[in-house]
Image (cartoon, rainbow, N blue to C red; front, side, top):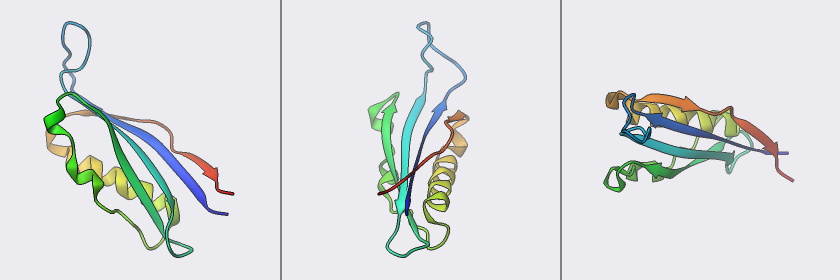
Length: 104
């Protein structure tokens, strides 16, 4: 059986507006599944929300496949990519637990 894994990753500025909404935020859904070989994995990063549409991450459509480690390694690679992308932004990262389900 192959696995499908997913998690939400959000990055927020520490300062907020009068309405309590962070001044900057990015929200992503990462889904990873099996790749073309038994030990490979392929993640997909979907941008769910951004504070300014012009700052939408176009690079998230990149292919982040891994040859070993399956979906677990693929989701870790995608999270590392997002962390590196937002490294200079001085944002706080909040991530959900990585969920896993078996494919039929």
